[in-house]
Length: 570
Image (cartoon, helix red, strand yellow):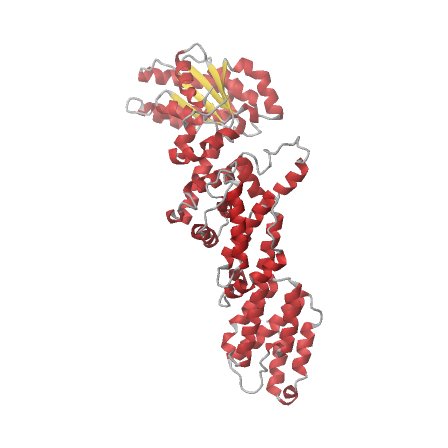
């Protein structure tokens, strides 16, 4: 049955011959929601959650309070106060199970008489599978059976019985026949439930996808709804265009939540009987492969704009870790929105894609250096990915591509920014192709190398001009050393810095604070080059250079300063 039928079942149960029934259904299917709807329209109902309950006595005591609280009013106020005082001092464990239940019967009968109440009183127990391990299921079922013997009291037990394990499962199977008159199994959530949770706008976009995935947990929709609201709140409504669509954001958020909640980040939609399963699994198990898996198997290639996959990685990481960079995500979306050509997708014809590839060839060969490097990489990555898919030769080698984009890389460099701000996010150009990934990585590496070269040249200019107040460029170069492991730039910078007297402004005679700060940063730079790049002896070589200067032998203040400089690991 569907979850919304619970209300009808309980309405029937209230006046039926059944005394104790079980509502069984998986987590998140909507059991508690529709039970709550029933409770809100009926006053003679007591709801008890078994979540975390350790002993039967705590349950019995809660029943006392629930019955009394439900009866609180002018006519029974005095009686209510008297009973509450007695209950607060009642040691239920002392009276024991057999005495406690009759006390409930007396309490129920007394209140019914005072209130003139003649109808059925229903006690609902929820979350059986979430009880504490110390609480025995036999005790719970025994309590239900005992309560059902009280006149005009009926009981409802709600459970996800498929989550009962080991001893609990065994005891439930052994004793349920005695304790339960009728079992109702909820196998589907209500048709209207996802729409009510997500709203029609979102459901109209992801509904078909969700139905094809055949899952039953409404909490996945609740989490999707909350995550969509979080993302839109952080990024703002202004991000949406006909290129980066609201619908694609809904799809990516849903796929991300579904993958984590329902499939536990496992590739469950892959066919294990496929002879290539192991290879396919290894491909999709990578960080980039996960995005391709979500796009192809969960979203079924349904994004309005395939370029929006560039944002997918950030959305997925955001949900999994809670960490995100609004600036990076907005940059990616802005890039997508500013891209002028009509995107080709899964639904394009072969000829349309071939035309795009030819356009990209001509575009790359005619670069003048002023084009934005991100636009160049994007066009390249898209064209190369389609070349691989359609087995077409792009006719421009990786080496030639690096030569053709050299001017664009040079113009891209901004020395007022760090190396991290100068590089580009590879996820903006993700296609799932290893060959494309290699080309993009080679361009990114070339950007980092060019940045270091231009930065070292700028430092040398200021060094020769004695502009020591510009020492922030030394800090940027040191940051670059830690992030760059390219052998060619290592060799170039080690030699270049040595040839430029290590950029070291000899602190002899009268100096100022800027010059001294520059000296400290140079020393740190040389030390970090040796440590990070494993250039053995580079630091000692620099120290020897300073000690052997002719001026060092004559200037005692210089000797003192060098002693301090090399003594303290600043």
